[in-house]
Image (cartoon, rainbow, N blue to C red; front, top):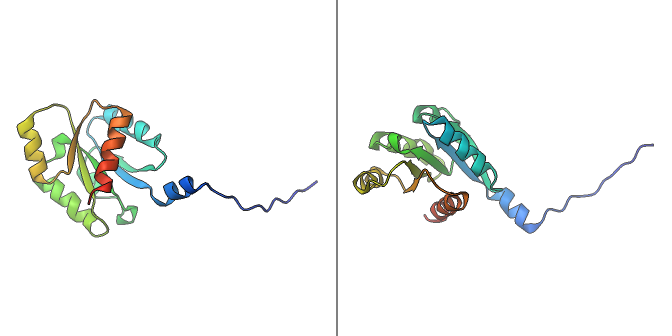
Length: 143
């Protein structure tokens, strides 16, 4: 016996909002463990979508501009001003990409230098899921 089921699926308002407002994230981290951990943690957050994860910013430049990256999580070892400017210029064609540096230590001078180079904010690599989610949302909602 064949049944035909023609019912329209009604998504909740919250789910509709999340589907329209995904935060597209690219991870650039040299350490495979951190990179995979970030991917696992961030993939659990419904409105976060991992577009790319790579170990170098030159690999990041190979992804399509159609990906519309909103945020780049960038290993602190890759935060020289040339790298940051290339990332910002590359994605500026479509949107204002935010860069969140992933740091191993609390060296205040180094952190000031990173911010001066164009990073939008810094987070320590030893973070909780809640902390990184809050940091990302805060960056995305500020213009």
